Image (cartoon, rainbow, N blue to C red; front, top):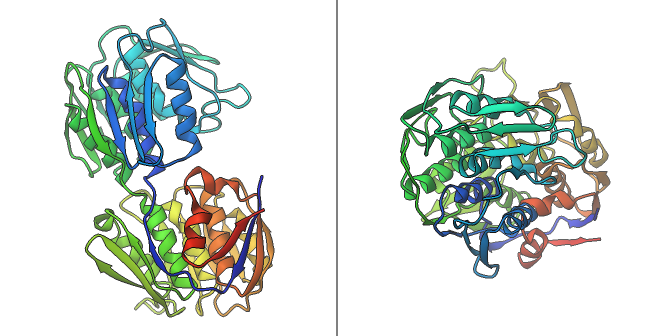
Length: 428
């Protein structure tokens, strides 16, 4: 694991383009299994999870043509690919859960082991995926390792799961697109990356209604064809770069196609005193007042809440916390998605920040801190490394983030982009 060395207090200014969305490209790649024709993806980020998926596809007989410089990838699973009678999902790929639906639809049978060391799915809950598969006609014939069969044609059904799971919604969409009849999913996830997958399926010939809402209706078709689809920019990365520019006193412009998805996100960062200018195809971080926006209800503490889309994303709450340590007022952060996702906040104390973890979901950050550079330990969570980075880069002096490698899983060329914009940051 590598450390990140930050010499903070220097303005980060200029223009930057974000990468393609990791959480969009992975299901889009998996959906390419639903056709024998070529699928081309554009704006493909250079991340390790893609490399692992492509290695798996190649081992199963697929053909791949990738242009790293052009961020373009063409993949074809022709009639000979995945025709070995039984497919075993790969280990070591956190996105392997997204293969459940398309591999089952293509191959008719699959096996995977959730108990093996370095397993494909780890501790992620798989019940919503298995429930969708069973409700649409699949059968679980063995456990540990799991074996799943598609006895015949998958058949449409009405589903209403316990909660809006992004990956389970994507599993539903990929199966229902080729199932017989009509399927509905109430309490569907609607994040931008879910929308991107559904738009790609539409371009492949699927019939989907309700994209971007909490209710998806999908009329199954006999076959899907190839397509050319663009991976959307990562809205998390857009907000992260804007926050970095603002807290360093720079003027940073992010050129992006995600403007329509950003209003609520920007409004939450404005609560922390960040200022933005919105133009055509670009957003600029233009300043930072450090003042917390006080609610009109005087008895309430200012707060930022994270919950499933269209709420403020949980994957941006750590970055907002990183900004807040430099603010003059107090604010409450509430993660309604993940329990225990704020435990890392004790590392902020090393910077001189005053924080109080109220419970597994809520954190209070006090304002008016006398911040100092520090060496901190990052957990293996991409967004938390970024939170510590945003805290460090606003502080004069040298800070070190140990075990910062997770950034590379979702933010390609992060250090190179920032140094080109004036930041003093390097790997060690």
